[in-house]
Length: 482
Image 1 (cartoon, rainbow, N blue to C red):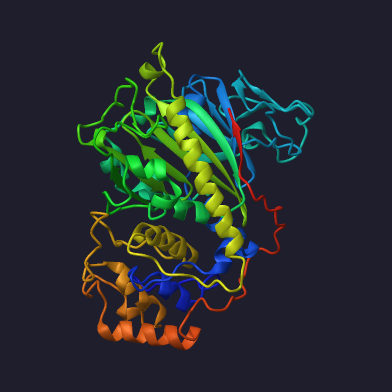
Image 2 (cartoon, one colour; image 1 turned 90 degrees about the vertical axis):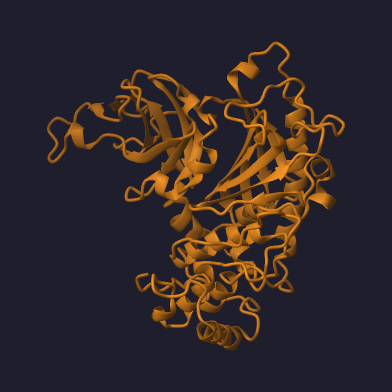
């Protein structure tokens, strides 16, 4: 492994070390990671503007000339299908004086005309007419087209990346296709969209999704259908994490129908195996999407960070077109189930946001049911530090059995060596991936010396782009159904 020094402008070296340890000795992210406007600004720059983000579905622009608007970190974006049937994305900004070129949220067009001075662009983003510019110096229609944005698709989802130098989407997804390639999500259609305004940090929402430790007290309906301790996790080989939970005998899906969990005749989705029909799969796609795969439908959450203490969550339920075309199709049982579950989750996330403002709270510890939360926090901490995601994480193959304490941890155990100042101790092809007792002792000693036994005990100043205006906290999530 090449010599690599972490960026410690967000988290101190001791904090990074404490998070990157095996989860039994690891600590959660520090309080300011959820509240500091400067950290939120860095997340906007280093995550939202550099990683691939799901913004919609290919069926939102199904034929040439169709388009839809979207946004990443407040940037106005336009996704359009060209005459050549290719999907492209552009900033929805006229190259003349910056006016939004398109006003409608979605629609069909043969060309795009800026409403201000009538500059005209074709569906491929090329400027084809700009009156009174023919005598300008250093100006040509060819060089003043709409500014492009990187676009790729996977399983019917449209991903955008604001970084023109970003690696291709498959490198971010890693081996996810090996897990989900048997499904045909690209044909699914959206039956319902519910948008929630949650007064909580986006990472609290992702951490909540990553575990079911909270399910018995918070989600009795869910826990009745899929007990919290029956399931397992997968070992990811990319920027994702996932696992499955098993349906109880007699239940067919997640639905609010008196605890029966019936599909009411809805057939399984394409690609479902007999084993799949007994499970609910949960996947976090870094950085801001959750896929919950049910036997008969796909539940998608897209989280949109708005402020350190505010997140928009877009929840969609997708079904097979043939299922939606049945005269008796009625998804209200599934919609009601997840609206209830979502509302329960958003409430406790908002309570967590309020509680962690207190200086009395320092980063806590993971229970033996929260290795998957630790896996998400690892991705956050390593992105903060500019390090590659850990090659290995603790994986609970069965939720009812804690991982053995001697379970191999791959690069994560050796991660502490990054912070000792001895790059030769880091994992390498000829170095034991578990690290040495000496390197761990040095890292542990430095962590104690630097943070007085708790690397998160005190807040630290964080560098960032500057102040950020706090949004007014909302104590109750509000939902808008479309």
